[in-house]
Amino acid sequence: MDQTFDEETYAIETRALVKFYGRVQALRGVDLAVKRGEIFGFLGPNGAGKTTTIRCLLDLIRPNGGQARVLDLDPQKNPIAVRARVGYLPGELHLDENLTVESALHYLNRLRSGKADWDFVRHIAGRLELDLKLSIKNLSKGNKQKVGLLQALMHRPELLLLDEPTFGLDPLMQQKVLRMICEAQEQGATVFFSSHILSEVQEIAERVGIIRKGVVVEVAQTEALISRSFRRIRIRFKQPVDTRDLRQVPGVEVLSQSDGTSVLMQVEGEMDRLIKSLANYPVLDFETEHPSLEEIFLAYYQEDAHQE
Amino acid sequence: MFTVLRYSLSRMRWQILGWGLALALIGAYLIQFFDTMVEMRGQMEQMLSNFPAEMMAFFGDLSQIFTPPVYLHVEFFSYMPMILGIFAVLSGSGLLAGDEEQGTLDLILAYPISRSAFFAGRFLAFTLAALLILMITWLGFIITLPGTSIDLSVLEMALPFLSLFAVLMLFGALALFFSMLLPARRMAAMLAGLILLASFFITSLARIDPDLELWSDFSPLTYYQGGEAITGMDWVWFAALLGFSLLFALLAGWRFLRRDIRVAGEGSWRFSLRPFRMAKQAGG
Image 1 (tube, one colour):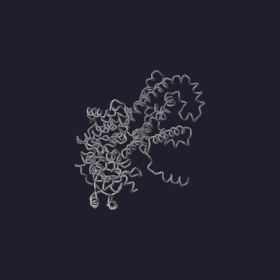
Image 2: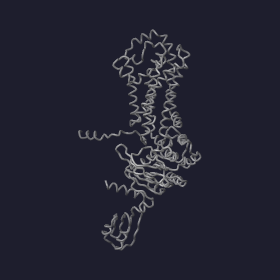
Image 3: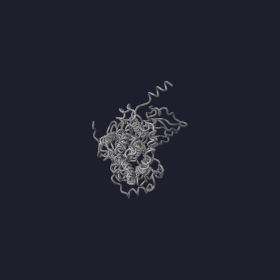
Image 4: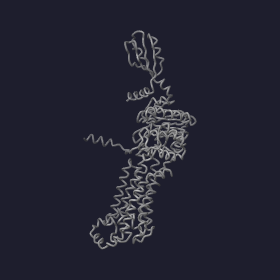
């Protein structure tokens, strides 16, 4: 059944994408929609299906079910047209070790019919502090990663698919790369990137998708996800209180309590019922704290572990 | 496709020069040695008469070794399928699977090049590399021909190389096809190498053992003429070897277009060994 896709709005859309590797099901129905011009962070631990999803979008592997659209095109029917408009950084980058950086980039550029502007290539290489004359076999892991980033950016693609873009880079270089990704977006590119480093996703991604065991379990605005998922609340009371009633409020978990005058709790969902319950208590102070994306991410996986 | 072809040929340049020059030097030496051997005919005939039949079977008709076609076959072309077969099997099996196992294919195929164009570029590069190795070797032979009593034209001298080319293409394409079916390049190389070795022994031993004649009909090297091509090239055999090469290449290409590309490393068999392991554990 062919479902309609919103091609005007989305650079990437997948519906019920399924992929098996032999008897192992890597994707169990991935539904994603990445808006044109946004930076979308794709989070998940190893083996969750991030790389498999990206590789399906480039027709490097063929899904066993579901549909995908990339820049209005079906990657299986029009793989060349899709790849011509996409810059891709693999999660495991391997380059021909016998070439210099410059000759590797020239070869890759020829595969794109020489689309790259060589002044732009030198400019990016300069910012990445990458010497184009060096032989690839002599490069460190971080420098090889820079070559990978450079080849993905050099033809100014409409869509960047970056699998762990800052992997192997030092913190300063990570910041530079994140800036470059933002600049690519400012110039009109859509960026879809996977990462383990949650702080960087939080820093640049407008929306985040969380994938768990081959299923996208959450897609939301980064800020909204952080604000709506759970909060940590510290309450101080004027005198020692019995918190048994508070513990009964749905979504509330008391994390610690000291002297009966101070309690730290975690609240999932809306605060309304907790606040109404607190009306019966002598509250002195009330502090809420939003969790980091990292805590939200871990919460998804802890939940999963509990289910198991 | 031409970008891939140029790149692949450039990557194979040292192999081409290495194999080509080494074999050209052997060829030049053998051509020069022909006249010396003819001068020592009496001693050579006495020596050859003491060789066991099993050994003679590998080299063809040694009684005619003092004629240039048989001399060249015995001294060079009879074992060249085994020697250059190593190049064919290793290059063929690594043509796509080598890049895939190194992890470079994942990036290249994310570029706007079709799998069929990439395959064609790679296979054409292998074909040209085999041709160039044989051309350099052929040059080694013909440059030294004028100083000897061997009366062969450059075209006649090219015929055994054409026969050898067909064999190299067959085993290269076979190794390529296996590399698209099997999970690892080394398995493909090993299987194609075993078939090459088996073919060499079956075809050679069928000359002295009539029981092997039926088997030798299915052995690719039976249709390889080597030096015998100088006196009468069998173009049907030549076309048949190339035809099967093309068939295996097309099958390899068909498989390449449909399969998933691995990120890197070797693949694995799709069947589970769990029942065997469980049975072993239960038994042990």
